[in-house]
Image (cartoon, rainbow, N blue to C red; front, side):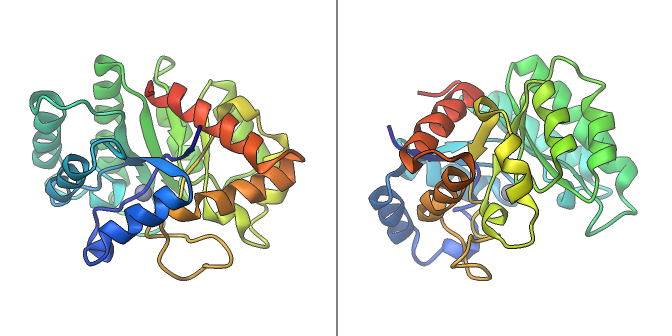
Length: 256
Ligand SMILES: [Zn+2]
């Protein structure tokens, strides 16, 4: 079994000049499966091209990121829904979707509407959702609570133990990334208490690189660094973390 990066944006311009090296380094680090969440209609071509170039490594999701929700959100959603349902491709999740009140609080109303609409897509297509939450835990929980049948993952989880328990009690997954390696992130208090069957690993590359690469461009080959941190907090081997989290990721995305 290999590592799985459940969330990376390797199709973004940050990687335009060295995608092949990024893939090589990921393979060398035993990270052989990488799920790609979409951002908006401007990123779908590069995302799908990358999946076509490396069909055994990259697996696409489709959705509208909350930071891309603006007055044109309905037109944008129509475009993405057409790709999701009419391109003849298999998508592994609706994502990334959710609420972000860090960058813009004025769009909360339409962020909620876009989030709800996309959760409804996921339910009707029997797909998991990949949720982005920033400074909007309460608001996001209130939306997710309206859909008891929805499944998925809270990506880049940085909340507290009570919030993790709320997520996992619904059978949803917690995505751990580079923040888990940051001192003062508080994650060393949360990770030991997690239900290990509902944890997946992710980089969120190019963002949020783990220590010792913090502040630099993140990439999928750093997944084992996050795995090592989780292993230390779970008091088990890094190999165990790889097995547990990769199996979880396969269950989450019904892949493999
Ligand atoms: Zn992301």
